[in-house]
Image 1 (cartoon, helix red, strand yellow):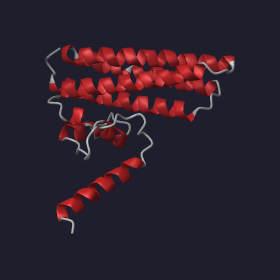
Image 2 (tube, helix red, strand yellow):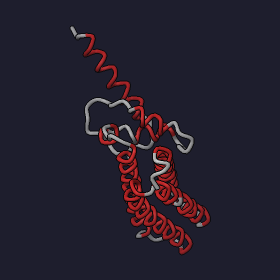
Image 3 (cartoon, one colour):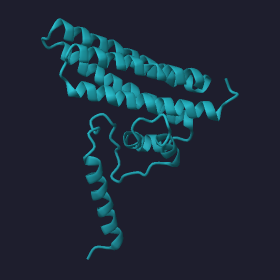
Image 4 (cartoon, helix red, strand yellow):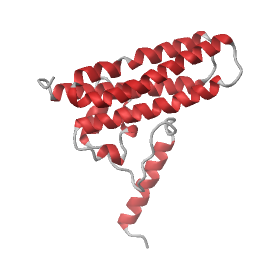
Length: 197
């Protein structure tokens, strides 16, 4: 005979796995190394419900890791978001570099190279923003926001080159989600520290 708490625990784990398994973002979002799902903190909920966030569900899943949940303040959370964005950009850069190695048209190669440059820029920007969060949240806010036009240009070049690669367009969409999360957290920092810069 199972105890009620054990049945509840099994039910929670089953429902959590079932509900998260349908998300198409599992390859991009870091995995939590815990056996039970950790509920989002109020700070994560507030961020993911913000106006800047393009995909609330993605935001909640990406930020519901123990490392993010246990951060003590907005600056630490912002640093972790920037690290997630940079890691995602590095993963996508590797995908683009692998695709470039395959034979293709000169127009496709031009589009792919544009994306390589956009992702290099995104990596540098996310890393730079991490260091700016404490000193100048306003500059950090701007620097994370300007990643989006680079990714949009990448998408435009892929479409113009008629590159048929849904995983690339999906990766670009995820990058925009990370940018929106970065923009949301830097906006929060600006509001929390209005006279600090």
